Length: 225
Image (cartoon, rainbow, N blue to C red; front, side, top):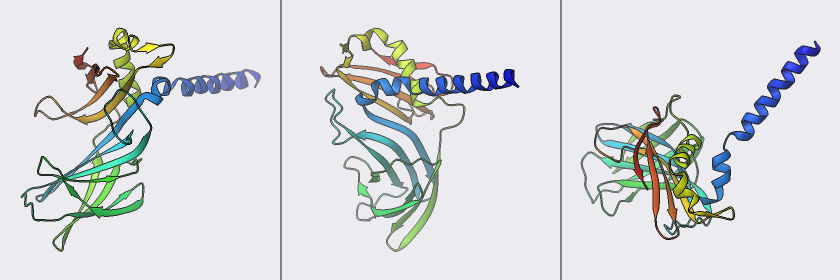
């Protein structure tokens, strides 16, 4: 029984150490993370293409190399299959089981509309009702992240290892003269599809050091150094 108790105690200690190490990079750089897009959701029909991103970001958002405080967010975007600038779109959605409603706002440069909700979605789905001209359509947006994909912590660690010298040049006396963006996002390179982690350090001098990472293979696909 004594050996069993020692074994169990060892397991508990190991678990505690793992929990302490988890999020080490995020904790170290937490005060500098201006944006963390932690998930991406999609749905579609004949009438709409729908997507959503969620996480936390600087408020007000400013690309200046400093993080001045963040707030939660979920942004839902719709793209009507037939664009008509005269039409108005509204929504009802559930984020973490809580209902939110309002109007979609048109994108100034594209044929899409978006709604910005000050809450991070913690679930794998977002339910949405799109309303326009007396008609409505229901959607269940599903997370595109899967169990074999790395998380934001791992993506940041990979970037820190790849850009160790560049990041070190931004640090002095334990202070980082930069802000960090960690985004789980659609393929930004071409139209072949897929989702990637983008991690960037933006310095006060507006220098950008960044990596684009495959979330499954952990391969670094692009580097800006």
